[in-house]
Length: 104
Image 1 (tube, helix red, strand yellow):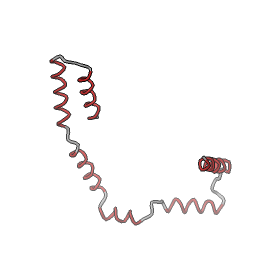
Image 2 (cartoon, rainbow, N blue to C red):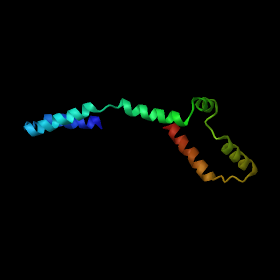
Image 3 (cartoon, rainbow, N blue to C red):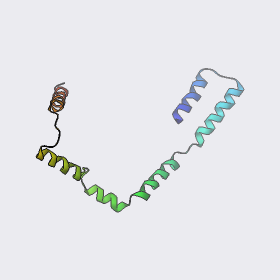
Image 4 (cartoon, helix red, strand yellow):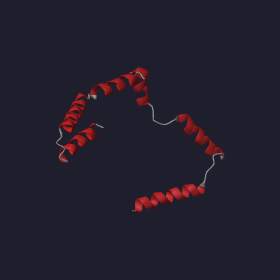
């Protein structure tokens, strides 16, 4: 967003706008752009995240695999029992698409 404002100011200067009122408004826009401080915005979001998740919990999560074990065991059991719906046409299409991507 700041780049867009700077580009508008630069484009106005290139187009040859020399009236005093336009120049005054451009100077005011430059001052507003200079007052923007993005470092304070990022500090607030970081502290919010750390309030909800403790460092110990983050370390525990890092040790665990990023997979939902309950869901995977449920799917494995359903496949073993024959109750998981397999669409062989979709599987064949996906394999063929992957083969075409590898070949290209």
